[in-house]
Length: 335
Image 1 (tube, helix red, strand yellow):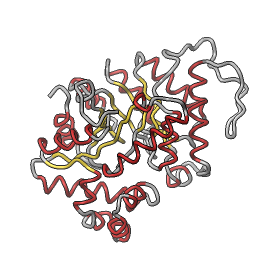
Image 2 (cartoon, rainbow, N blue to C red):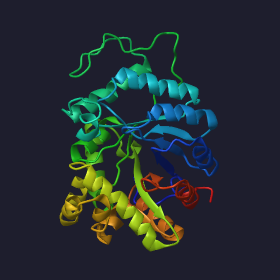
Image 3 (cartoon, one colour):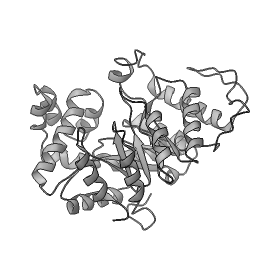
């Protein structure tokens, strides 16, 4: 990947609608030229359920899980869901996977959060086998199916669907380079990005792959408003929630980027609102694209220059419909 923004990738942009399920917004994103729309699920609506609904209302935009975890479904179930979405959408499915974190895996699904990286590696290999229709069995550490092919009555739209890994730590980023088609980190400090690209290249070397073939996507927290101070305040509330209420996951990258004191202050706050007051500008500027539409677009271009092939913009958590629409308009490739 080049550090310079080029004509082929400059206008690539996706959008994360997170927990929203409004087909009209996805239609608008398609009209504005967005490459893909990403649906999260967490502890809410199924990502696949939302994407199936969106497929009915759209024709071109990619439809991505962003993300589904590798503990709550078997690889066969994920492969079935992805292949079905791909069939129903005419080959537009994108599979975003992640190991998630104990709060989701143990707290919500009641599964043990154990050996997440070996599990992810095996998961990707198995999903690909099901999509290819390999008839032989598979003897794995976590799954040992006697066959890895769908019934003959169901032939997938494609034998391969792009798989992205929502990795944050060094080992998981290296795993992405070795096995996945793309990397999609969330709330990742831009100051750590060059080192992380090195991890990605290390993993690609292990898999005898060209690191340039791995699509580097990134969820980009954006807060776009003509009132820059208001934008910063809303973005800080989003960051505080992720640092304070999901401990041991997103906070690690911020600590490693040199913001340990800020992270500790946010986590010690009595509420998320109080924690937002402790998110300083230094950290916010590393994690988010914030300001007027002009300022925000310039910051997005910076991310492209440091190696983000596909920025996936998102409005802050809890944003109303008007804010999401403003976000779509601000970063529209056809603008």
